[in-house]
Length: 218
Ligand code: GRF
Image (cartoon, helix red, strand yellow):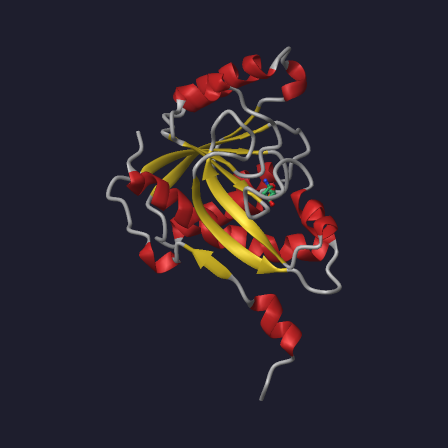
C-alpha cells in the first residue's frame, strides 16, 4: 500500500550529523537545565538519560516563570527545581549571577537552555565557556530570535527545522552542533509546524549534548 504523499512528507526529516555517528562519553555529564515553559525538551533529555542514550544526570532545573509546566515534569523525575524569577532581579547580569551560584551549588558542568526565554549575558557565558547549549526552532542562521516558527511561515520557505548550538553573546549565533530539517506543509499553522519541529528537537537535543561533550572544546 502506498501512503498518501502528505504522510511521507510530514514524517520526512534529515538530521545532521546523523544520530548513529555520536560516540558516548565515559564520564557522566552533570547537567543544569534552564527552561521557561512546557519543558518537553527537558523531558526528552531525562528520557534519553533513562534509556541509556545519554550518559548524564540532570542535577537541577532552573525556571523563571512560576507557572511553567516544566516544574511538574521535574517533580515527576525527582529532579530539584529552583525558581529564579527574572522579575525579581534588577538586570540580566544580576539574574545570571544567581543562576551561576545555583548551578555551582548543584555541581553542574554543562548548562542546557531548553526553551529558556531569556537572553543570557557574558556573565553566565564566561562562567561556563563552551559548555552552554541552546535549542532553537529554526535552521540557523535563518530566523533568529523570538517567533522563529512564525518567521519561517511568513518567509514562505519550504523547509525549516531546529538547531542545537553552543551559546555565545550574540543571540542564536554560536557554533552549530546539530540540525534537523522539517518540511513545511501547505496547510501548516505555526502550531502544527512547531509540533513537528519539536519531535525533531527531542531527537537531536540529547545527541547534541553528547556530541558537545565529545568535542572537548573546553
Ligand atoms: C522549543 O521549541 C525550543 O526550540 C524553543 O522553545 C521551545 C521550548 O519547548 N527555544 P519546550 O518547553 O521544551 O516544550
